[in-house]
Length: 242
Image (cartoon, rainbow, N blue to C red):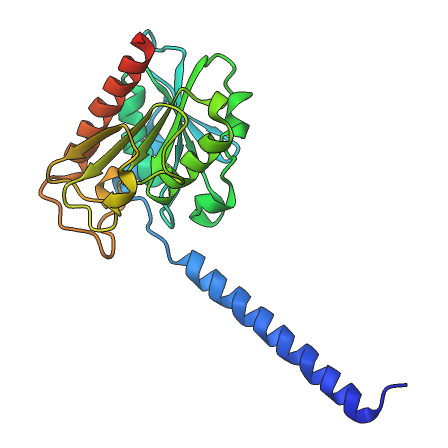
């Protein structure tokens, strides 16, 4: 039988552990609750476009009738950015004939679901050629997935992001703005294809406003996204012509 003094010590130990767990949970909740939200334009695309389909925790942006191809693009959102912020970008890409899938991440952090792409393939069996990528943390996690499953995609596309590891096992493209204040450019040395958007910054790949620590853009989000779509489309075309 435990002595009263020992029981008291155990009681306090349990209380301290419970307090630590509660404090950690509260801190995590506060952290994930503070994120960048999609603006009115992003909300409009999600709610009003007839070519956007909601499938579980993802949105599918279908090309216009007659423009559809068998090529698809899976997109991982940036860290602490609401997924719908990328709706305008992916809507434009779908206009080029690429079925684009925007994946919603747990707590808006792709690190919690690096394998999210696995849920997409069976959902869209008509797509024969897949590309995968994302913005910032989402791009890094997409590269991590590709490193482990190189046979699941024909190309990696990173926006304001760098790959996990020295290089990608498949053709890769990195697009970033000249005014990006958050990207570590030194980690892109092993990326074979790089494109700089003059005047662009880190946040304007999405439609969620300014981001803390970012540089000041000299172009609008609309212009940065339009240029991004052109570069992605060109990259995909080059890969499919090989």
